[in-house]
Length: 377
Image (cartoon, rainbow, N blue to C red; front, side, top):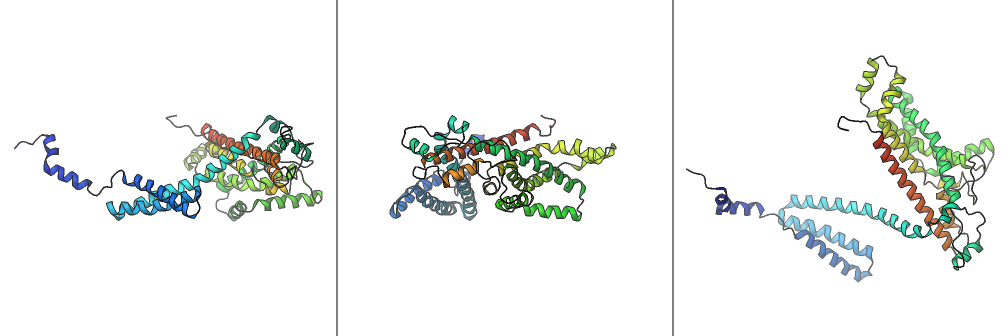
């Protein structure tokens, strides 16, 4: 008996019936988009009834869609598909909710900061800027004078000293925990205190540094290095945890191969373990810097506030970008015309965001540059 051609098989009534049976319980492609459009329209109507606002409209539309879409999918395809669609929509909604604040912050800072990002802001300080200066700028008689150059210098200087202190301490501590502690009591104690330090409020670190130098040099001691010590207290736990995790993922076979060749432990660590993990270590250090560069509270009690440029981190008050922003908003140069101060604050906030974004980009480039080479690379 000969087999009928393929086109006759697919066009037979039996094949058409099987195909219809397979697709009978599948939702049409237009169903979910139609529900989304209906949710937007009904959400707008409900928002208009209670006082229209874009945020309220979005909330009503999202709630209506999250309720109606899974119910419609359940009615057509069954409870399992409905539950799966509900989970999918909730995950997408959570993603949107997480992205909206980030996009909103970046957009707000860009919209308010770009107009004030001038050469005057980048190359001058607030030394000599008075309320009369800002009054004249607000009246349109002069451009906005005064800048954040001294704050940029203070941010770079304090962060440099904090990094110089925290990275060696954090790196050596992590090496001890992974390579030498062997689960001993000292290693467990260090791990406990590192975990505790990870969660301490930043103002506590600032008070610690202020009290420490107050005992040594007298009360009300404020200069850049004191702030660097406060940031070091905040950076060390981050560096330790990141470095510890990177050292743990180095294969033990590499260590054993080095020991089998008679290489000493310290040389194995410096020549085998650290070079293998250097990509993650460098990335973790960069992210730790990005974490502390925007701290405000510890700097208020350790570095003080200055209007002029101070290049000496060991003498005199220093200003950083976060404290500059704080004082420009809270105590404007001209209380009657705060707009010039607000413009400087937004521009400084934009500079701070750009610095953090640059550090994250550097972390990615460093991680890629020092990543272990594989056979295919």
